[in-house]
Amino acid sequence: MLIADYDEKVLTVNGAFEKLFQWRKEEVIGKSRQEMDIVSKEEGKENLKLIEELKNGKTLPPYETVRYTKSGESVCVSVSCSPIYDDQNQLVAYSVIYRDITPIKKLELELIESKQWYKSLFTNHHHAVCMLDMDGTILNINSAFLETLQLSASDVLHRNYLDIAKRLGVCNYKSWNVYEAISYSTELTLRRSQHSAQHVYITTIPVKVNNQTVGAYAILHDITPQKEAEEQLAYTMKELENIKYALDESASVMILDANGTITYINDMYIRYSDYQKEDLLGKYYRDAGLRHDLSELRETIKSGKVWRGELEMWTKHNQLYWVSNTIVPLKDIDGNITYYVSIHNDITEQKALENKLHFEATHDSLTGLPNRAMLLKELNKVIEHGQRKSDEFFALLFLDCDNFKQINDEYGHHIGDEFLKAYTKRLKSCVRKGDRIYRLGGDEFIIILNVTNGREIEQIARRIHVSLQQSWNVGGYCLRTTTTIGVSIYPEDGESAALLLKNADDALYKGKREGKNNYMLYQT
Image (cartoon, rainbow, N blue to C red; front, side, top):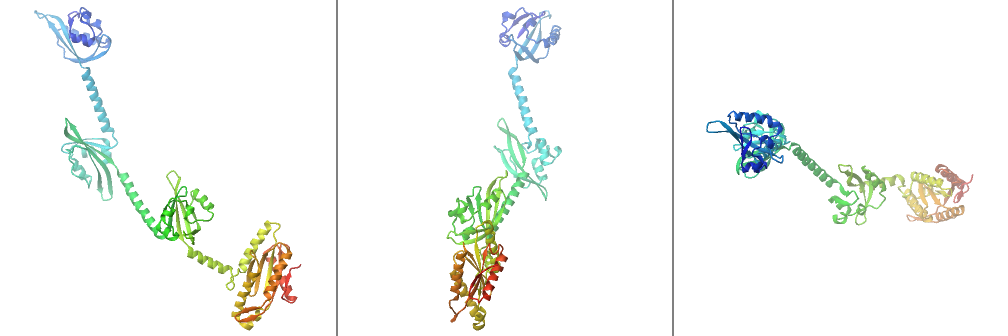
């Protein structure tokens, strides 16, 4: 408290004044109030007006303002001013009572900030938020609440949440008890129509004042996209399960990681390969029965492309089988290959049939020797190889059984066929490994000899000629026959299959004209 006379000279101050403003009593008594600089210059003029009002005998209502200590620090105060009269009722002084309200102002500021924090959280929360009283009546909402539920404020405010739930078609909620001591969360499904569903996740939080529950907050999060994604994922997983089942029932399946290590094999793979899962899981893919070059396969799948082809496979017990194989690289969202799915279909029977048909198309059905088509194909290959190597040299022998027609006419075609089989067997015994024998048809045969010089040709031709003159025991009959042989040499007698065959044929018929039962080298 401060007391000043009519001329504003300080008469006295109490200890609280000294403590608050840091002025000692002896420093201020007799001084003008303005000399203490308690009031700021900006507020000085307004303060003079108040003092004039006091001098006129008016009591001023308390007001809040800022005053300054001796050291210049600001203090929030409540100010009460009152006039003081003498016995004759004359104004002789006035008193000023200062109350330090700094702690109160601080609390008020904190309260304001707290309200602003609350308001910001409530208003700006991106999830729907509403406030309910103890009866479940909605007292307040944020804009996200209206956007999420597609309602207007008039649809919601001051209405019971059960009415709102009914209007929104909520079909899986329980009667909510705001007295629950802890927060409660659940999922709700809103069905406004038969074909429209919205899924929300709701959390209710009790509001307590003085340890008494007075209401609750409800926070709603629209999880429709997540639920739809979960449903789609479940549908996709079911589809994948069905696809896997279909694959497992119809094909051998192996899954490899990016390094080629086996991570999965199905039961059908085990049935075909005779391996057990423990034999292969964690092993390199080559351990699963692959033994040939796979460089082209690896290059294809490592580039991220699907590889399709046929592979020879070997069982655990070294039995060969064939598969039609499709290998599909699987990638992550960044495009990196993480796994390979290898799908095998057993084509062993199909391959055997193909090989049989190919053999029948390229071999003589009676003797099993390659036929004319195979001769031309392989002869062209030999010539192509010879054209790449300047020192390549081989001979073509054209053989004709001189009296085969007589055997057929005298003993019948059955004996003739048996004779041709025996003839083939003897021919095979006369040639070396690497030499090839073909049957053109009837009693005509071709031999391709891998030789290095003309002397070697004559030695082999003579050996064949002598062997074929020996008697034959066929079907209980002792047969005698002779053979005429025409010989052409690559490359001097021709550099094409057609020319070599023609010149060998010419040499053969020259031998026939000269009495048969001989061998004749082609001469121009």
